[in-house]
Image (cartoon, rainbow over all chains, first blue to last red; front, side, top):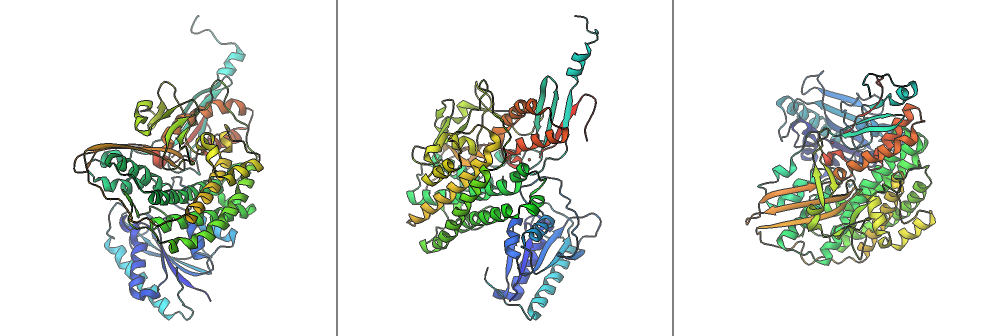
Amino acid sequence: MINTVVISLGHRFRSDDGVGPYILDRVRQGLGNDAVCIGNGGDVTRLLEDWMNRRVYLVDAACTDSRAPGEVIHLNGLEEELPASLSITSSHGLNLSEAIELGKLMGMLPHALDIYAICGEKFSTGGDLSPAVRISADMVAEYIVTELKTEQSYKPDQV
Amino acid sequence: MPLHRPLPKKAAAMTKSKIIKVDYLARVEGEGALYIRYDDGGVQDVQLKIFEPPRFFEAFLRGRDYLEAPDITARICGICPVAYQMSALHAMEDALGLVPTLELRALRRLIYCGEWIESHVLHIAMLHAPDFLGYPSAVAMAKDHPQIVQRGLQLKKAGNAIVRLLGGREIHPINVRVGGFYRVPRAGELRPLVDELQRARDMAVENARWAASLPFPKFERSTQNPYEFVALSHPDEYPMNEGRIASTRGLNISVADYDQHFTERHVEYTNALHSVLNQRGAYMVGPMARFNLNFDRLSPLVQQVAGEIGFPPFCANPFQSIVVRSLEVLYAFDEALRILENYRRPEEPYLQCQPREAAGYAATEAPRGLLYHRYSLDRDGKITDAKIVPPTSQNQKTIEEDLHSMIPQYLHLPEEKLRWQCEQAIRNYDPCISCSTHFLKLHLERGDRRLP
């Protein structure tokens, strides 16, 4: 049996960076206790444990100047290449591309990885999403809820 | 001597200086730059430039309630938030005359074990191991050595489990407070940890054996300029939350006397203050300092494993800090299991107190070393003054001195290897520039030739 999980990345008090946790909240509202939702606060190594052998919806914010705020980027994380990270700082953490690469090498990949990244407008301190980002976030959340409700194999487990 | 007399050819060649430049130092936390100018006569200048803007935590703590300090200061670092929480709450308790019960004390030690494991394992397996095995990153290393990363992830997961159980979550835990915890676990909640930690302890033994087998560059300071190692020292236990501040040159002071013996200095090229021991200068804090000053208080298992891998009770080669960290990881698992075996749930989750006008001091052992906090409170418990000295600030000057001493031994290396060696020497300290304030660009330059 393949379990499905929704994982968010991002910080809910960094304006549009909080779009992942926002979608996670909406999925929880839509599915109640049936939802397997994991908020990842930045420990990307933990992703490897959380997503291994599962069907995963991963929701996050995208930071880019080349797309309009609210635009939704949908990627198959196992088949498509992720855009290079904009971060130029060094960190003790891994980024998502590195986590996928490491997962491939370690045999710790999800069974399927749908990434929904919503282009943000502002990433300053604050708890509110930009209007365009919120509209897209609601749409993505609704889509995931519908998918999960109709997914034949969806059997939530306990996390 | 005439100023314009041409130098003999040999002398001219010797004075031609070289500058190493590395624009981006990877596998450290934060942002900074390193500038090294050297010539055949030796290293002329080393500047660890931390240009991350100051973060002003000490300033914006003023006016905040004493209860807020542990959670505010925890935000200084995502890798060692527990250390900030512990130093802050111990300082507040010192100010307010609170003495935690033995049961609360044990739980604090347990969550600190979790953080040491999380932080050390991440550095050992993902950041430092690639240096020794010749890979640019953990991902590249994992292609040939997946078992190193796999073991690291398993060990870190066990550390995460401790912090999550006691702190509510593994990063920036939220259950710690002045006087104790907001909620303390029942014995039954801790029991499932035991099996996981026992398995992880076995893996930690393997990890220490593997670390000891790595090829270490030979490097030790001269006898004229040895390290002064500084760490907490406690008569009965390997130090985490309590103890006196001791050094290998005879320093033995109470934490409240820290400001009389240590001075922070502003240095023009960096935004992080340099900390020095008065009248003595640079010193080293961190795992090697703890280990060298407290070896006999490590658990019998750790001492036994150290003996089996041939690792001495005193280590002065910073490149071997990866072995010391591995032994501390083993200790943290062993200590966590000891605490779990003896666990008695505290009668109250935290001790109550009334605010008063007072000053409080504390130092605890963050994964990277001594973390000092000092606070002054008014009669309502509002913070009027705060001082925080993180380990990386204290090690900055020692890192620079290491490079000064090390580079002459490696001048025969090709530039790329020399640059690598410099970066590795910095990573020996697992610097957290976010704590000291953040990054690193490394410049190595010779004469008028600027390297990319």
